[in-house]
Image (cartoon, rainbow, N blue to C red):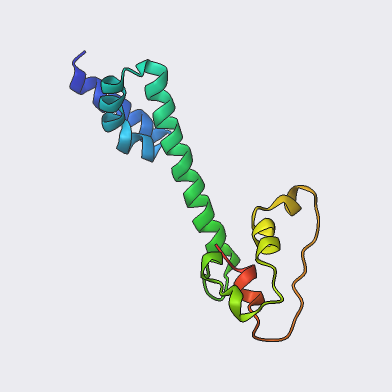
Length: 123
């Protein structure tokens, strides 16, 4: 079996398994693994890491789209100087998401215009 035939078969398998990122990256990852002397497992690890990162990114985009936030904001864009009563340290702590695993509720209360929606819809 020639190398080209083998490549076509692998690409077909990857596409049938819907491993699109791996199909796209398999040749470049192969060359890199060979240059760095990573061996078969290193090559496979590199491909799997790329596929996993790609899928996680896609899932995040899908979840943000499904959430239908009124607009997309980033926590880095929040101007803490305008609202001194908002603790930057506490907010960054909440952004880590520890409250999710402990099943705690988070409630943002305050007058209109202080950035509650911005904080709640950050991505």
